[in-house]
Image 1 (cartoon, rainbow, N blue to C red):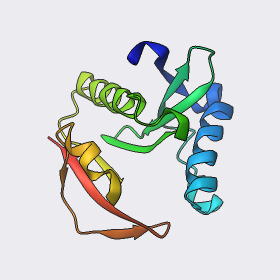
Image 2: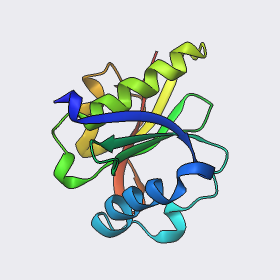
Image 3: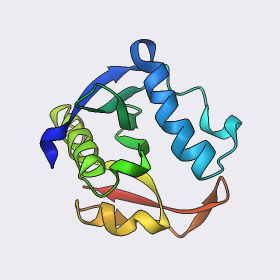
Length: 141
């Protein structure tokens, strides 16, 4: 079902409203992440991926901080299981590979480990709490 949405590489300066909407709905409202933890001041200098449906509405996002790290991956609930998260991840990996990045990392919520493992990521840390949600560090070499 890849043809009913597109992935765009955007900046915070041009697409903050759409990025903020997706992350607020998924992280702040749904997962109860404290506002001050979600808005960490790193968005302005990061590269962002934005998934848009056919109507041009934001349905998912991811943040690339430039050091090989993928973060803030979020997909709105009605779009989960439709390939949006996978497309965001593949696009992020591709962008980093094009830049010559050999080691790509992310902090995954424990329930999402199998999702990332399907793309070749491996757990490389013990579990830890981030915003009261269990996470692990994962890497792709």
